[in-house]
Image (cartoon, rainbow, N blue to C red):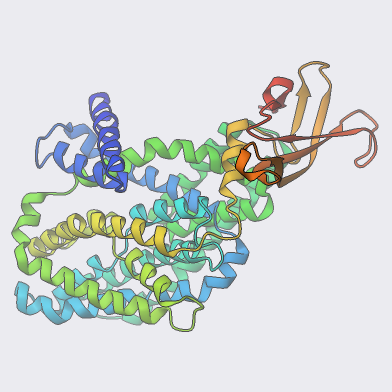
Length: 494
């Protein structure tokens, strides 16, 4: 397995680098590397790695969903909540309808088998969409109207909706046509319990992190472990209570952000570093699951079915955005953002074949082909349209996030020790500000350059000192004055 990890790291980074050099999303290079080193092409990946591939992909997906949760602000969700709910259902219904319209004739299958195929194809890939949306949010793109936030929420709800429809259609094929309404009711139930199951431990972790000043890496590990348990709960409880674990993971990060932005930001930054490795695992292993020989069998007919489904899906996405404040260009971006398919198709594409569906091989072939066609095209489209269409916001806050990480600054409530006097101080105030300095350019005499800085105010923490009383000091930190680590060290309990 160590050998396989080395293959994933080295070749995955190479693919990422090459595609970024030609101004394309690095994840496409990782997917292609996965296909090439996987068991269906060069077979460089050892069987042991393929056996645990599902678990590794799940852990990697948890990392990016946690990051998504730590970016979901309540005010943004309020603005786009209605549109996100509609987008989680209407585009999928349109796509399933489009597939059912053409698949029986082109692929020689029944309408029920076409519905099963449509429900597999209709799932948007959070593995592709979520990282790209987070990248836009980090850059402050689309912040005015909350478009990336809406797509984050909608893509997770979309998977819940589509997977439930898939189980209903598959059950109908097996002769279980009773209680269809009861099965469909699992959609709102799973969403409700998914959110609740994430909020409760999230609030408990917030209380824990507030009480104890643990080091950020250990906080992050605890959050990761909790999120993994939440996904395990879904499989344990699925026979009794449906739980949307994807939403649980996002709700976990959301409630910590809601209660304490400083704690959430520290954990999010650690997850951002962890994502470098998790991203390699996720996309290389997803690519390794793709059997290009099976995809080839789908042929032109399979590609036509996928294309027709995407056309119907695009119409459904556009219809979902009626009544929103988005202009036609922003709606077009949302349409493009809903194209990529990878995660769900790789996970359940082979289920109909294993369940004995007559057209199971064809369904698997089309599902695999959809990954090869839509993941790269969708990722490229998101990057190109996003950079050209999404607004910049008034001033992107990502500069402060990068600055805070670079300078290793503390947050409000954290304690620091002076390296010179040994005295302990507590951070009681912080501000993100823009400072000005006279321009050095001879041609712009009298003008000013602006640069981001973070203002911190410290309170002398002494026995008997009440908050608000006693000595305080304050400093501005920026790239022009990166002196925090020269004078202070952050204190943690563990």
